[in-house]
Image (tube, rainbow, N blue to C red):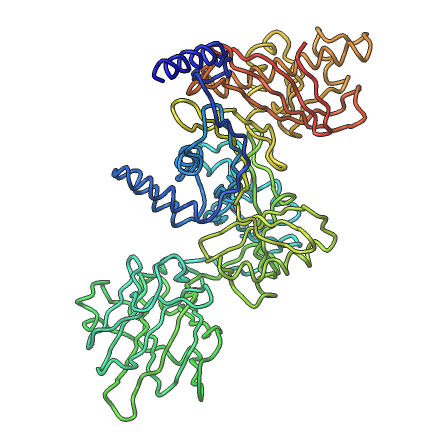
Length: 640
């Protein structure tokens, strides 16, 4: 029997060795006997996160442990938890019996992160200052723009002067005043100082701490606090629940009245839970500004010059307390004190709450002013080396919009409740897929931006979560991401840097001999036909005829063939510039690339605008071989 067994083994060995299992799968190391080559489609599931996190933690290093925490927290992939690096852990566990050459297309959610437009707009606004208005108007100026000194013409001048090293595509929110009428000669206010408490930290227990001001309780341990309500900061004091006697002084910085004509002082006030008159306003012209000498100075009580409410219950609303005439102190330097005398130990108690805002001193002089002016917000964009209004693409909420919402500002938590209704009213005829970037103020000193999309009759905030399908391949080194490079020349409505790469290249090369090949705006060129302004590749005869090599008198077929070849050359140029270190293979897999761009007015097509995706292969150092292109309408054209 052993002879027959041995003979059978020899026969079977001969049979199998005669079969050719060495057919090479391009890009992979060769294995002799693939048995389970899969081609799968898989949708990533929530429970798969645990599988990847477990594998990461098993590596027992700080970096992978941190990545596992991020993945568990976000419940999706992101730049910090890259699917290209992490998905192989899942595939190794899920397809453990798969053979080399297997491929799986995985669909998953990716937390893209906010795009550069909304990120750039979510910054502190540029507030136009008195010196800015003076720059526009001259010495006799008003703190507003008018039709003759329009924001569209004036703000670019101001931003050019004040924004250092702006970058192409940068946005700036600008806050300014505008009057529909020109200024007239009248008595105007020349500001000495103004404090609205908005630029300081606020919250329960946070004491007012302003440079050169004094905030001191001479008898107890409380002070004026910098509070906030409805996104508005103010100063507040109360002896309620202190179990103490309080003598709290909030003293302004020195007010220099030298050379003043008719100086004045004013503030806004709210009074709440009135129990007794606890607030007095005092002026001193011999205080030296030192906290230790407060009681040594002479203070004149001027409370009677103001109207301090005494509500029967609850709180009053914000109102001006009136105006103090400081003419008697002309030529002197004075300090003004808000003195709070509270007592939580007495019967009845003296624990009234006082809130102050918009404390200011000013001089009345002859000048020019506008009868009415309104605060406005507008986004500006730095494009083609100059600042331009971005109001056509960015919606900035205006003061009237906040008033309609019953708010002074809008928090990010409130925005999803208010902005959809706002957009419905503003864009009643919005079409499916319509998008708008909306900027709103979250406080006096901060802005935030969101992108909203109109879909199925509803405005919704863009979550910046993308659904992506990526292909992974199994090599003898394990599962690897298909390294094909994907580059869009345009994302949504915004051109990416690919167009300007080509424009700048032509400017530095072909346009040296023929400057007409680059537009006067510097955002388009006519050698390859790339236009960064409109985000397209123009095939128009009048654009391409600037190139002396263009067959202007040729047939349509000859012109299109010429432009097609130039476009292929441009795609190769982009990949060379964008990926200068690309190698022919990554992990044993051929390095491919797909570049998608919009071709405008191709005379051989019925479509005036047509997106084409070009496929190229890296075949050497900065060498890309054209393979094919596919139209968004399904046309496939392979390289000859």
